[in-house]
Image (cartoon, rainbow, N blue to C red; front, side):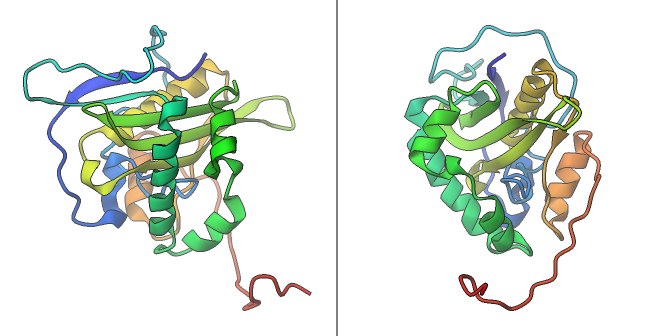
Amino acid sequence: MRCRSRGTTASPPRRSSSASTGCRAGRWSACGCTSSPTGPGARSSPRSTTSRPEARRPRPGRGGRRTRQGSTVEATRPATADDVDRILELTRALRAELQGQRGGDLWWRTHEPVEHHEPGLRALLDYDDDCVLVGTVDDTVVGYAITRRHRLPDGAHLAVVGELYVEPDAREVGVGESLVSALLEWAAHRGCVGVDATALPGNRAAKNFFETHGFVARSLTMHKPLGVAAGNSE
C-alpha cells in the first residue's frame, strides 16, 4: 500500500508562541522532527496504530475539501515530485530548530539521510519501503513526514519515522496528528510490528505528543562528548 491521504476541516492556524513547543502541529521527533511531530497538534498521526479501510489514492495536489465557505482545511497526502523543493525548504527549518535543542546538532550529523538532497528525496517517492507525506492547509504544504520500513534480524519489519515537521504558523490545527495517523496506517498495511520515533532529551512537547498517540519509551541513548573537533579524529 502506498501512502494515503486524509483531509479534514480545521480551525484557522494559530501562531505558536514558541517554535520549540509546536509539537502539536507536527514538528516531530528527533528522528526528524524536533519534538512535535511533530507535536500534539497534529491531528491524525499518532492517534492510533489501528489501520482503517483503504481509501482510493488521491490525485496529486489534492488533499481535503472545504465543507463550508471560508473554512480552513488541513489534509495529508502522498508527496509528489512537485513537492520536493518545498520539502527541502522545510528540512532546513527543521535543522535550524534541532540545532537549538540538546542533542539536536549531533543527531543531525549522525542521521542526516540522503533524502535531504533533491535526487535522494525524489527517489524515495517511488520506493515501496518509504512513505513520504505532506501536510497541507488550504492546499498549501506546511509540513511533511518521512517514514522508512526496516527489516529486523528476525525477518520482521519496523517502521521508523525519520522526519516529521510542521512550520510554526501552521501548528495546533491538526496537521501533525494527520501526518502521524497516515504514517501509522501505512506502517500497519506494510506489516510492520511497530513504529519508532525519536524525541530529543528535554523535549517534553515531543514526548507528550507521541505518548498521547500511544507511543512509549523503549530505550535511552547515553552520550559523552570528548571535545574533539570534527575532522580531527586521528
